[in-house]
Length: 322
Image (cartoon, rainbow, N blue to C red; front, side, top):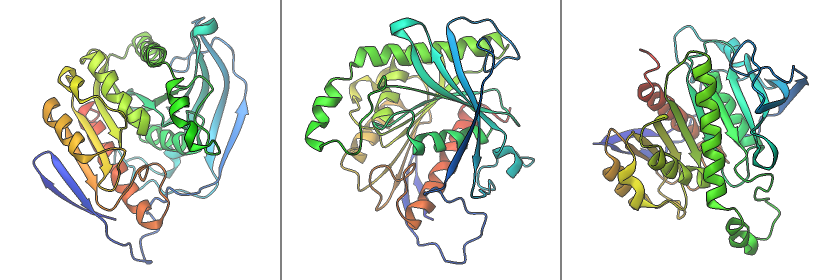
């Protein structure tokens, strides 16, 4: 796992090989089998309230997610009292937000124990909201007490790994930016309405990977601090630095210095423009996707450290401990 060296708001992580005798409490993020159990719940049950009659949300099924390989959560503690049992008490709801052609599919991961009453909007990479790596990451965030909503940004048409790369630009051009912005706004409104109905007035956080990481900047620029209190962008792509001055909340940027899709110089410029306690954290010798798709034991270690940095940033930005 890397060591952290910080100068101002910019930090660089240097890789260090982990010893084979590393503590068994280390959290491995790679290739863990996942099992879903499904059961039906009443169609008008609200995911954040004991009961509700909100007609604009169709809840298709409820699942509890069990990690077959036992995962220690010693690195994911928010409070001293949280333990492994808490990580097994996360529920998931498959939702349809809105009605008719404007409805959006989404998945909500809800902490059933040590719920801190805060909501996180998680914007996926190009592989979509049903991708196992994205859902596993959302589950880990919920394990820390959050309620995490993952909307279907691509309306059932995510990028598939078996598609020819020559088709990528054609595919991305087919994803209407305005439609996506409307879907994100609808997802945000749904979360805000649910929390208001539950008597909770805390602001939301937003996390994004890759393409979703680039959208974090757009979301926060449009919001201007109304709904969101903090943002985290993992190796965001297709970002527009010109809108950074409209962002009114701190943003954490996490990337690798070997990622041509997310130049560090661009992140530094955006971070400087935003200010407000924003940070740039760069992991040396890391490429694109290492934090939620680690492909080696070394990347596992850096992914663990990236998660802890993100967790602490969210906790501070959303005043979890106050």
